[in-house]
Length: 613
Image (cartoon, rainbow, N blue to C red; front, side, top):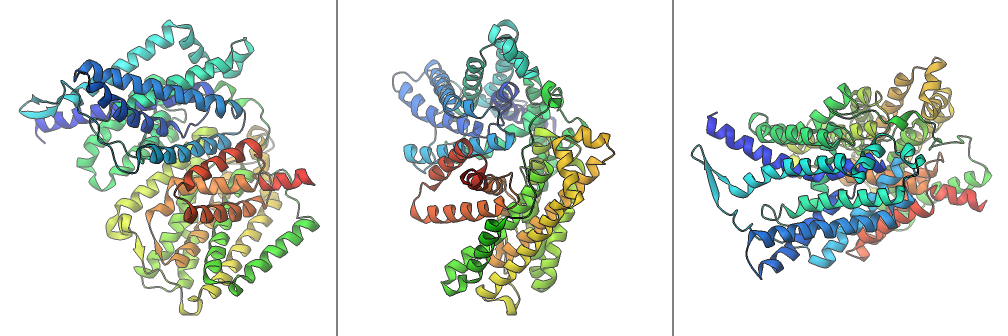
């Protein structure tokens, strides 16, 4: 490659890295102080872009000067910062002490709400922003033309880093942020007003996200899908740099920006994988990130969050389970649509149950469980369409595919704990998604694979419903038996105190790894059943939103109950299935429902039943 071409690629990478750092720095600061994995950070980025395409053109009507353009950008960031304060006061202040899983879902509910509110306010059409006055021209570097605005963005990241350094080291607020990043409980014990500190931190983090979005309007149009496209990259930068480390986020952003700039030239087939591969490698080698430090409070005792009573169902529970099975068997007496919904509920119930086997029984919070569901679907579907096999061996291969992927990923995942473990599960899931999405010759890319039909004897919806019921219930009963067996008790012991379990001679990593494999195999079977029920598969079966759906199901049903996720899967699927045809704003209603669930009854439907009893 010629020198001028290499230089231009490097400058493009630096411009992207600078923009990414501005966004990720806010996420890093918020996590460092509040310990909340803020999924809504991408929504603030999107709101910053929409605020800028509204405020900046209005200001430029008075005078098309760079001063008013950047005044509009800063005003947009401040507006978004105030929205961050609103979220902190109304929502986050109530969930600081709940488990990370609940926090993630609550902030994902905010994502759904903001998406629909943006569509209501600005409509579904992309909105292009104005070009930056005085920076519309190109600059010639070694006879290569490079946009002046991109060159300006390269200096924004270091400028923000310098301002944050001054804030952290020259102001009382910054010193408190650094202290809370190291030990939040100790800061509270010293008499610091934590509510004000957290509110100020959310303002700063949201304003940085809004600034990142506002700075993008000369480059990209504001659209309602900006949030999810940027949040995964921001998570990658935050985790690689070290949760809570602003300099680490800057270093990670540089690595990611340059890796993407040159990776598209060297590895064009795996461009989506590179960042997540780097994240996985860093977490495996250095679990706290490049410049991160272990959490001082990580060793403190916390109450277990998961299955507490694995005993068999009581009489009422057995009657309820029997009624549910009879209702499923009677669905063919209604109509084809009821049979379809019943089949999907059974499949998602198995997937949710397998996830709760990990989360509720093993204490392993997975943000990427859909990867094993999707790989099971692809394993079965490709054997039918590519190898010409029938449904029977393909269904046998589905749990093998899911279990094999879980064995590979889980070998590294179980070496970590807490939020770093959860982030690594998301990284591996995104790697699997990217491979499926970009390996067009084999997987069909985003078009997916069609023609995944069951065998002739199971072609009718009614017969396939009974087949799905038999396999799903058998797998659920098997996992239930494992939960009540000594192996399940060992997983719960490691969940409650890994140090104590290790002290009495339990090989914690091996037990967690085997549990991870079992859960992945069960999810793979669910994915295989789903593939034949739909007749087609596509990369969305491995996506993060589907993983969040599974998490919502287990929390809706009750994470502390063995069979709660089954009720949660049925209720979640029924509500979502009914909302989508009725209104275009089902995301708003679903987001409100998720937040209400986290705030009002975090123990789920099973917890409500116990409270009523």
